[in-house]
Length: 270
Image (cartoon, rainbow, N blue to C red; front, side, top):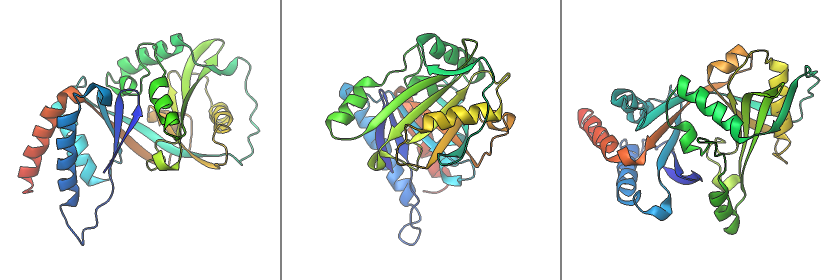
């Protein structure tokens, strides 16, 4: 497993496949070690480990069981939440000839836009996603962590744009950029789209705006796009390739989570 402090107060966990030839239980052993590290470290203020995040596929049985099923059983979104995303690609060399209807614009995101997103998310999910990405409370800045990466010689950038219709925010696009060494399965170097209200929004409009933001990813042609809510891609007739679940744990609840995990491991005789 890998861990990376991706946002101001959040660490992203990334799981890798274990070679069963060497050890059938390798993933479980490593997960236990990660749990020990988290339990012994999250109270160190300089680590800024308020939240832990992990993306996984529903058809991947291992992470679904050790992350997803426990979240469902816990049923406490203030401690542990799940949110589903659609995943597809934007190709920068594709010709985009859509005519944007009058009233639709792509603008810099404001504090009010983020509050609209937060209100929508709380009604739909009530989970931890926006807090973990530092998008709640009208925030939207991850300046300190981005500055720390820059001081260490790494390129990490987060930029926000609002999809507006006649001045009303209908969605937000995040250009979430990381260089190769910080990129985990293209999920930390991607375009993330939050759809607040899809009324009047068409496939051509969203394609054009995503393509416009993709110009920031210089030197890259095939850029991953994650869209929330997952159902938005189908509503907008976008070519969904996969579905990802974003698992987020409040670090204050990590003791309870790893207690659940140990119980699970005993049940499956590990």
